[in-house]
Structure formats: structure tokens, C-alpha cells
Image (tube, rainbow, N blue to C red; front, side):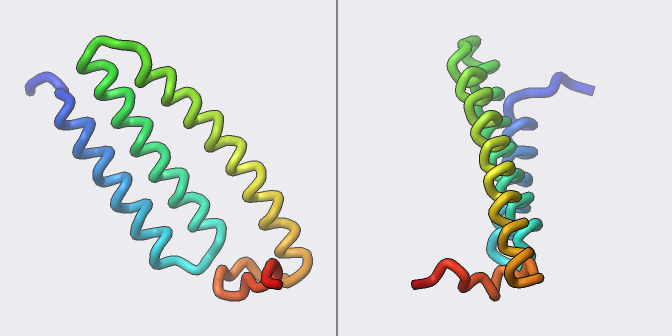
Length: 102
């Protein structure tokens, strides 16, 4: 077995990004859409850390920490909105999200 190189990290990140994109574009359940967005953000984090490791510099890892913090805030706000929506409409189907329309 050989060493794990940057290419291995990029392939895993590309797979995560593709799965997340497919989940966002094809699913109707808002919880699954939020999970797919988290997969996309994790793919970006993996790329940042892999390139940071490859170049021996720290900024990629620092940006990755900021993205993780942003993803946690997004999850908290998104789930809060989802709970409020479920209380009003009693569904979490993304097709029925017309509550915020004018």
C-alpha cells in the first residue's frame, strides 16, 4: 500500500460534493437538503485542508475552521426556521414552502 496523497483527498471531496449537489437538486425534504448542504461544505473543508497540507501552510486550515463555524450556525438557524415552518404547515416538504411569499 502506498501513501495517501492529495489526489486521494480530492477524489473523496469530489464524491462528497457530487452527492451533496445531487441531494440538494433532487430531494424535497428540507432536512435532507440541509444535510446535503453540509456535505458540500465538508467537501470544501476537505479540499482546503488537503491543499494546506500539500503546500505546508496554515491558512487553508484556518479557513476550514471558519467554514465549520459557519456550518454550525447555518444548521442552528436552518433547523429553527424548519421547526417554525413545521408548526405552521405541519409538513417539511420543500415544495410547500410558500409561507415567505408576499
